[in-house]
Image (tube, rainbow, N blue to C red):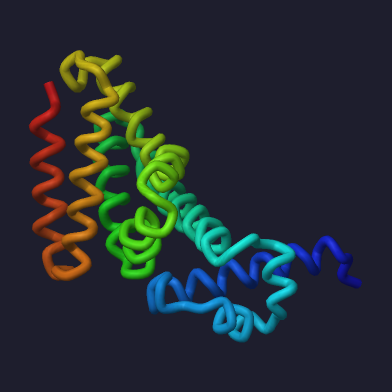
Length: 191
């Protein structure tokens, strides 16, 4: 027997999963609430019970995407013992994960446009950018990267990887060359 709380959570998960698929395929602007509730098999009332607006539902889908990318980055880094190898593996994992079309559309294209740069950036900070900042700080502490303020370097690396992921949306065959260029860039930082 399913409880009301379990039903509510199931409905919420279904709405997020359905909208995420639609946003990834069509883009935020091309998806209406009627299409979402029809595809999810729920009423608009059920949608509004969980989310205030389409933007609120998009935020939940974006959080899920960012969390998954952050988890991929952390898992790739954790597979290595050496801090430098953790750093480079995490950066490579971010670039690879963020080149998936659905991830690009939701996280890099529609995310900043729908929620605004400041909110999108705060969400990015809470997920994958946080891992990058921690890695850069550790490498500076261990003197694997020359002593310097970590925040500017973190922003530069994050921007470069986000831009590369966006570029790869139209040039997916360039992923091997792009990851090689990222490796050279990261290696140039090492003391």
